Image 1 (tube, helix red, strand yellow):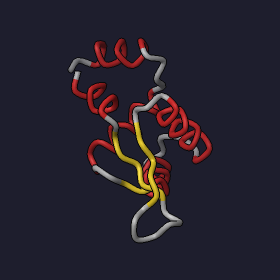
Image 2: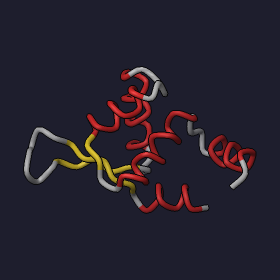
Image 3: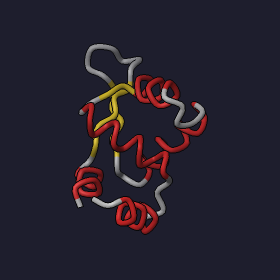
Length: 91
């Protein structure tokens, strides 16, 4: 996909570039812990942890990602893509 069409698609739904990067990370990893998403994004310098958290909340509220409690550790929350999130990345 060309960068221009990617930008137009992201802009049409009101998604920020940080949210798009987070969505792509979750797509690449499959199911990933929220803390790992925040650590990975902050490590590569995408945004501050507060911004990453805000974008994760946006993605969750708009049904692009699903956050569920880990079966082995109730303190850990895992992120995974919903059908809407997969469709957004595959269009």
